[in-house]
Image (tube, rainbow, N blue to C red):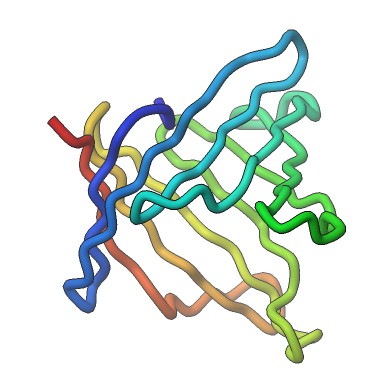
Length: 134
């Protein structure tokens, strides 16, 4: 569902072309993400087992300049809702961050970037929609 060409539009109206070049390589699947025509990184997904309502993956992102990878993150897929639990934002160690993608059909994703101090109550700090490019 994630692979292909998309056009992202943030709540601020900013338009960004996104291309996800994805492939499964046995146990892992990977996606090279390209935004605005520039490769941003390679995202590696490894299955981590079923959850009560779906499935979980651990996720690692490699950037294009060769910095050491950050901590493994998690992805939980429950139906049409994909929740990426991100590493803590820089300088805000007590604040947790996640990105929630809601698939509203095969060609439409609504996303919200959210933060929480408790991990229970989340505040949306950025949102938008991605639609599959024709």
